[in-house]
Image 1: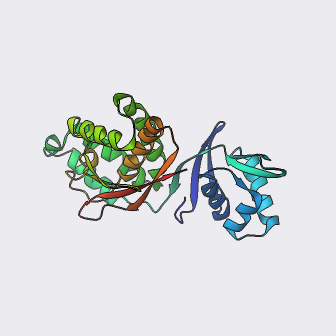
Image 2: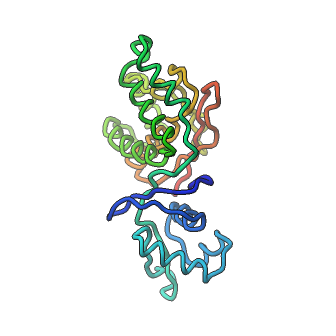
Length: 246
């Protein structure tokens, strides 16, 4: 969840919390897939029970998770998230941000589109200042996908995907192909014109990931994760996602 970074930022009902500590972040990442018992958390982290108890109490005190009785065994407790992962710290990288600003100041911006350039610049700007904004871009993508789903009338995964393909092309969102239907694997190409921008630091993969998750949640009435199993490379080839139903 934090990919080895030093600090992770979470959004809660009482505000934003910056969290240090790989064990705590590992616990929250584990709970992302649903409720987990104390023993499952201990096994997943590989830490002593006393250590996990301290971490869980700290996380509850920060309003990051909650506990309840296990419906299958009332002698035990289960834990679940009360927060959303927003961002994590990373080594600042100014190169792509500076290149994007140079592009915006040049006559070439017209050929790429002003709004698209500004959108890319915002994401590069976060990274330039040491913030990996992939988690919040994925969450925004989820919300956008849920809203986009209202444009679709199809039912069933096959028909929804076909309708999405047409919608994306008609509205210049990008393109994607279905690699397989069982399991569902999708290759996304040139999302939001990313291939046209001549700066090769990827910023939109997480946003596309969230869009699919939001559409599927609304249209298929199921919670799922679009696991990224292949990122676009330096030549900006396809991002590859696989659906995992929760």
